[in-house]
Every structure is written in C-alpha cells, then in structure tokens.
Length: 306
Image 1 (tube, rainbow, N blue to C red):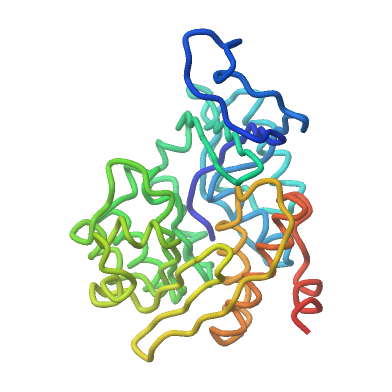
Image 2: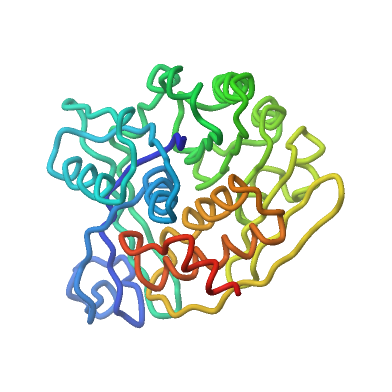
C-alpha cells in the first residue's frame, strides 16, 4: 500500500536553457522555445510509485486524493490502466487535482511550479484500516507535502501497519518548507523499517549528519538514492553501495519514485539488499527512458540484471 500524492505533471523539455524572469515574456531571457511537445503525465510520489509497482507485476493499492476536475479524471484513468487498486483514492469535488509544471533543459537543470490541490488534504481518516490490515508493505511517501500526515500522526499510522505485520517504509521527499528535522521525524523513524531518500533529503532532515543520524534516531535501515552515482543501503551492519545503470533520458522526473517501487518490489519477494538496490536502479533507468506508463515488468528488469 502506498500513501502519498497524486498529481498531473505538465512536462516541458527540449530547450538549451530555462527562461529567466523579466518584465516582458518576449525579451531575450524570459522566453525559451521548446523543440519537444508539451506532455501531460501522471505524477506525484504516491501515484508514480504505485503505477511502477503495478507495472512490475505487484498488487498495490494507492491511498491518495484527486479533485473532481478533468485532471482528476485523467489521473484515475492512468492509474487504472497501470493496474493500481483505487479503492482508497478519494475524489474531492471541492478541490482541484494537484498539478506540477516541470521545465527541464538539456543540462538537466529543472524548475517546478506546484499547486498542492486535493492531495495536500490527505489524512489518517483516508487510510482504511481494512486495507492497512491486508498490506504486506506500507510506504508513506510525499512526507513534506502531507501536512496532516506528519510527526506523531505518521508514527501512529506506521505503528498500526507494524501491528498488522507489514514492513513499513518512509520516503522523506520531496523536501519543501516547512522542513522536517530529526526532532519531528524521530517518532516516525522508530516505526520505520526502511527510509528511502536522496542525498539532498537526507542532508535536510539530518542537518548534514547523514544516514547514520537517521539510523541512530530509530530507522531500521536507510536507502540513499544517489542519482547517477547509484544507491547505498545502510543499517547496523554497515553499507552496501551499488552503481547506477546508464540511461538516456530527457527528464529525471519520477526517477526516485520508480526506484522506490523497484526496491520495495524486490524486497517484498525476498531479494537481499544488494540485489534489491540493483533491481531498483534498473527499474528507475528503464522507467526514465520510457516514462511511467511504459515502466518495465519484473521479468524484464531481471533479464537486464542477468
């Protein structure tokens, strides 16, 4: 079960530079011409992770919220097509669906504008206990974007999942203000078997102290996503580092979510950490090369690993 945001992303690529703010949109610096067509894609940490997990071949339910608008209908259609269980997806006719406009240039510099929409109102009441009781793995993602599911509330949710026998996972990203520090996340970490976060998110949440600080605060293990440099698993027994797979991609949007899906899928079927890291790296690479709707099946990832 994945608890997190669902958005529609407006993806802008195909330019050598991103525009700078100016007084007139037609001045030299404040407009950029795109060689690629504008794309409307499924987005949000929760939706992306659930969609890739389902494409891998896993059974997954998404706890999230969308608006009653056209974007909400688009998100529901994309998730259903991927095979995600939408029993706990709330459609709120009073709010808009969350939307992110993401512009990326060829040097991988990125700008984003985000409207939080319906996803930001997600609360513990949206998580059905019956569904929670059937989950073998529970991932809470989009932590900073869910104000009603932070701190003690998040800890209580994962504690309940633990009591039901689930493996619990927490993705700290994306880190947006107000930032969660160790004081806030410590109760959550004590109920978390696995923390997933990129280097920036680890740094923000630990004030630069790193993965060791998350472990000391109570996390069972930490997987640090290092982009082109691969990933690292850390627990009381030490560190395991696996290098990334090379990939040609026009955008890195969704890479971390695809990684989460791959890692949790591999762990769920019993893979050891080193194999799970490699599986997650390849899942993210193949997903980036094709996009979320064409994320790979598990057999394809295994074949690529050999």
